[in-house]
Length: 335
Image (cartoon, rainbow, N blue to C red; front, side, top):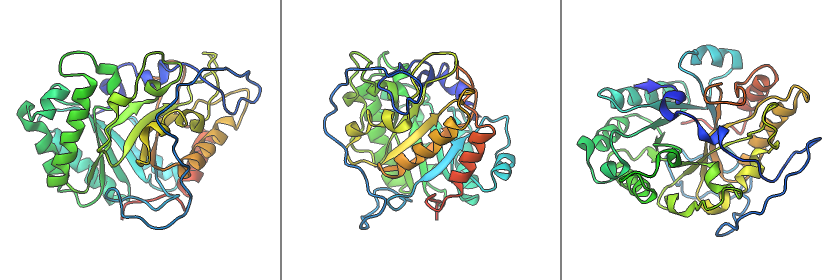
């Protein structure tokens, strides 16, 4: 069944737990100095234009274009919000939980999104452990899900248990099990649902240089055609954290992903009452960075849920900035 992200995730550690690191777009705020870890290799900046390459996944946009969208709480009408924006989202991020009707509901959401020229990016938890899903257990829930979603006539992004770091530790719920589950999903999708791209999504905190002892490497699914991360500007008027651009945070992630295309599963920024327009500029800067760094989709977390330091919902200037970006000619839509 479709659910809110609060029901799916609990505390939303990507916003609340992430510590401040080196600053970007400081303006009047003082710098914070961190000792960074060295990622395995550098990631080259992707050009806005370039020679055509074979697509890595169904619906891959040309260089410099990306699917631009958001998630919205179930209590709000997506069509009404799109009317306010003046154009449909190019990507709709939605969340589900496994039950007897889940596969049909996910497939129907995907069809509706494609009918409205949105790329569906759907997320779900799993009915058992990651090990269960990797080995075909839990009634082979995965195959049934992919069989039904595979009948959808267009590209789909599918994420199994995003931000898995929050729930790791128990037997069958270790990084090796998470990676094995994703590998099996990729293999089953290739057979049953070739238009479905499996997108593993981690949280930025795993890559944060101040997260002592964290090692992203065991979590990264090298076989994935697209790798995802949730990445926020954790600043708020009440928490004293450093204002960070999206690019400064993704710079800590992308070298770990190599040349694999990137999906930003969630991102967000709070408005600063003392600096009107700063958050709107942050959104524009985030999109510009994404277009030139191999990002193929980005979904704004347009909600106050799980935001202990204040709402991330788009309002007034930030909503207008989002609408302007959505109307840009670089926004990709499923064919």
